[in-house]
Image 1 (cartoon, rainbow, N blue to C red):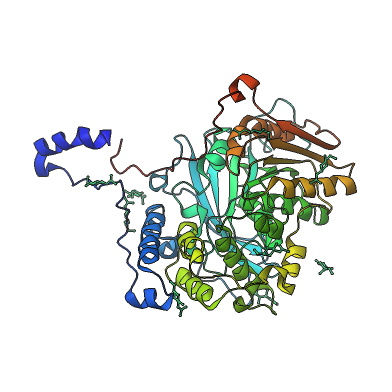
Image 2: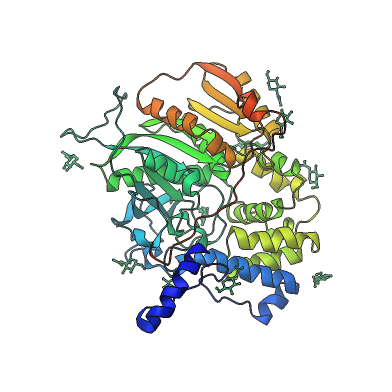
Length: 485
Ligand SMILES: *[C@@H]1O[C@H](CO)[C@@H](O)[C@H](O)[C@H]1NC(C)=O
Ligand SMILES: *[C@@H]1O[C@H](CO)[C@@H](O)[C@H](O)[C@H]1NC(C)=O
Ligand SMILES: *[C@@H]1O[C@H](CO)[C@@H](O)[C@H](O)[C@H]1NC(C)=O
Ligand SMILES: *[C@@H]1O[C@H](CO)[C@@H](O)[C@H](O)[C@H]1NC(C)=O
Ligand SMILES: *[C@@H]1O[C@H](CO)[C@@H](O)[C@H](O)[C@H]1NC(C)=O
Ligand SMILES: *[C@@H]1O[C@H](CO)[C@@H](O)[C@H](O)[C@H]1NC(C)=O
Ligand SMILES: *[C@@H]1O[C@H](CO)[C@@H](O)[C@H](O)[C@H]1NC(C)=O
Ligand SMILES: *[C@@H]1O[C@H](CO)[C@@H](O)[C@H](O)[C@H]1NC(C)=O
Ligand SMILES: *[C@@H]1O[C@H](CO)[C@@H](O)[C@H](O)[C@H]1NC(C)=O
Ligand SMILES: *[C@@H]1O[C@H](CO)[C@@H](O)[C@H](O)[C@H]1NC(C)=O
């Protein structure tokens, strides 16, 4: 607002000499409108239709340049052979220097994107995209890691953090690599890259390259993490370290833990450990413990994921006709999380989206078995962060999964840290220096403590004392600067 006040007299003086400024308050960079057929087919009320338009326009204003589905980067090379795809880990395309003026990156970072082959749940090769976020200088460590942190001519390599992203959506349009703030912005990728690591972050299959998103089929997302890292290491062998730490929060925390479980079964050289923040460990329990209607969008996404991997499942097993009509609309207009929220969460208060019994169906049991974190072998060391007031990935659910894991694998290395009065995303900020130090220690070759430990963090009593109103939650989002200042 202050900028606008300052600029308007200048503009009056200079008249037509300058291009007209775009208003950047509530006028997003899209004029998208639903057609009357779309509104009718999805049976949207006037308010829901309006809200969907606002949400979609907001999402489109966050795309880096063109929409993902219009960005030629996400088109597979002409010689890509669907009948005989290259093996997982193959590099398909490298965009060495992404046009970062289209993004809202912290200053001093640069970025690349790749297409590569990942691996579906059934082991088949499937194309995917990823970004690499580069700091200006690699972080170096006083103590050498078990592997080498320099290439053969002694140049420091960028230490790699493999980042599993949180939920951005379930359609092609929702690739973090094509969002101005990379979806998780300062929560994770910016903070990690600014600390001197190269962030290698896959867009889960189906986000970016046109495929069906296997939303929340965690072992498939974990495949994206490992093959994304392998592909990036092939693309930049002289820049990226062999060793890497896996990190993620929310859906990404679930993927990170699933990655530690994958590593126990299929060890990959260079793995140094996992940081899982506010992880979903038992998705159905998290959802049923949560009274928020917000979960409908997640369940619709999971139904889509199941539909793509479980032949006996069809969407109508879980979704009502209204739910299916809205799911179709979401795909038609390529909406992401904000749009899905308007279609499924708010709308669900008047139109039922889920069929009764969806969560006790056979498919639900199959899903649970495939995606459970905890009570299973994992490759330590692992750091788990959990806010006690998380309404999304619930603390009792995570604690139970940690307890089970520790009872079964008492000699592995698991550090569990609970954060009093802290919720889902803020745990990354409340704990930022702690988890960044933990990642540094893995590269520095510091031995993580053996066995399981649980700690509960709380701030000093004077800060947390009488009259305490709670810790800040997110009241901002990053906005693209069209004024050039
Ligand atoms: C957005 O900017 C326009 C033009 O400057 C102004 O008319 C409008 O009131 C603003 N809206 C809000 C929500 O600030
Ligand atoms: C359309 O939605 C309204 C509520 O907004 C509901 O009463 C009606 O039954 C729905 N119609 C169909 C065909 O689903
Ligand atoms: C608005 O969208 C158009 C078309 O996708 C794009 O060319 C333009 O750069 C965008 N402008 C801003 C300010 O994002
Ligand atoms: C990068 O994006 C900016 C902003 O849209 C544009 O002006 C510039 O031409 C682009 N650069 C290249 C090399 O495409
Ligand atoms: C494996 O799963 C993918 C979807 O994840 C599917 O497209 C493909 O047909 C499946 N392949 C086999 C052999 O079942
Ligand atoms: C080592 O890395 C530097 C900097 O990236 C590069 O210029 C050099 O070619 C690399 N040397 C070898 C032998 O890989
Ligand atoms: C299934 O969902 C219902 C309604 O939301 C809930 O009351 C019930 O506890 C859930 N059951 C399980 C096993 O999660
Ligand atoms: C869970 O999945 C494993 C394979 O991933 C399978 O061997 C086992 O039978 C499944 N258990 C149930 C209860 O479905
Ligand atoms: C987890 O274990 C701790 C320590 O043994 C215990 O105090 C707590 O009640 C357990 N919580 C759950 C949910 O099992
Ligand atoms: C913070 O957590 C403690 C322990 O769970 C609780 O007693 C207290 O009421 C909480 N404070 C706020 C402001 O939520």
